[in-house]
Length: 123
Length: 162
Image 1 (cartoon, each protein chain N blue to C red):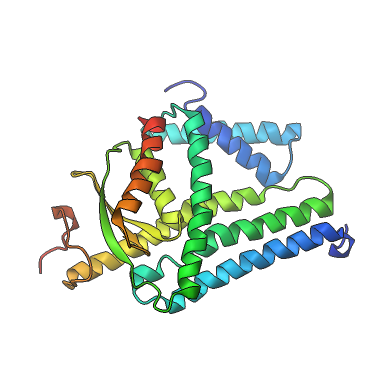
Image 2 (spheres, chains in turn yellow, purple):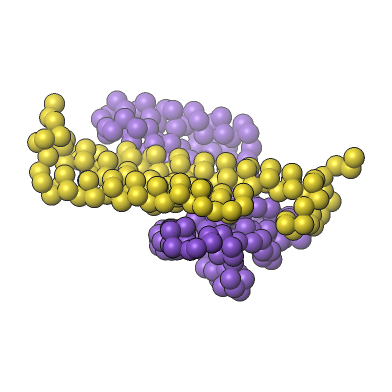
């Protein structure tokens, strides 16, 4: 078992850089949640954290453990695959729920339903 | 469709998943992973999903590279809007794009691409008309987005799946 102190300087610096960049990108995404005005605009902001933010932090993790254990450690790639496959499902669910609510309330801000299946039930 | 391996690509992907999870290519894990992968593909066959046909693996790789580059670029673009813009989200809006892609798997991949790229979200697909409703954070020029989605992604997806 080796500790983080055994890490060569180049690996420690690159890991720190990658993790900090990832954290900064995710922070900007969270800031977007705060700054953007409408619900539909807000949904865009967290995707920064689930794409570039996640990629940088995972690359930092892969680099750190590969350097520490002196063998390639790449199972972080699974996290990237699963996050990329599941985030769109949640986002689309949220946006469609919001759209349905706004259409039911007769909001003029959203495009009208184009086909019958999109129409909210009468009453 | 029958036989020992109804979905060879799925089984291969599951075996790779197993080996990555266990971080090992020892014979024991190879055997256990293969057994699990084959069993899972039989379970999948019982559901009888429509089998996707990937016709052009080269085009799929090209699409992957293109999407990764676009994700990086739009991360920077959305980040700049959030940090720099005095009134962020003022250009946000809905837009409709007519699609020629009809293949279900192609549409699913397109939905993942569009939604996981910051700045664009797939809202609704009208299967009868073949139109896609999108929400875009920086909707200054609709034609740019139509060109990106139809010219870059849809064309390649149709090559791959249809």
